[in-house]
Image (cartoon, rainbow, N blue to C red; front, top):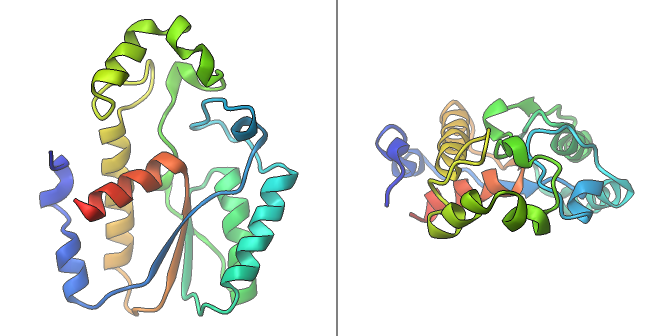
Length: 182
């Protein structure tokens, strides 16, 4: 099923003007990632390992002549982006559309507790994860639509075609990748 925003922004139109190398990067680790907690909009910072991961990423991409770095404004992504941008003399641009899936009432809960605490949602998610609404949150389709729109509109405004890094979150990045490959 094609996402509803596909008619408004077409990847093909962007590529016709010349490819822009884009690095889609997930932020470094947080304590909630390690504890397998639902982490959406809570502004949980990177943990020690997450900062180390951001350093390794920075080293790995230091030879790439990045022209821009964009990031979700959430602390874990922003810290990763700031670290990545520094050797290139860049400052990240904040893209609110890149924030993670709104986990609503699930925020902070351990994933293993989901079937017992939200059995109806769990069944709906298993049946149709794209359109099942997180209690008090959003659907995967909504997260995908805003993340794709954010990336495409940002890339469409670029006047140069040099490499760009985008730092975001697992679900938002997954949505962009799924849209890209159709």
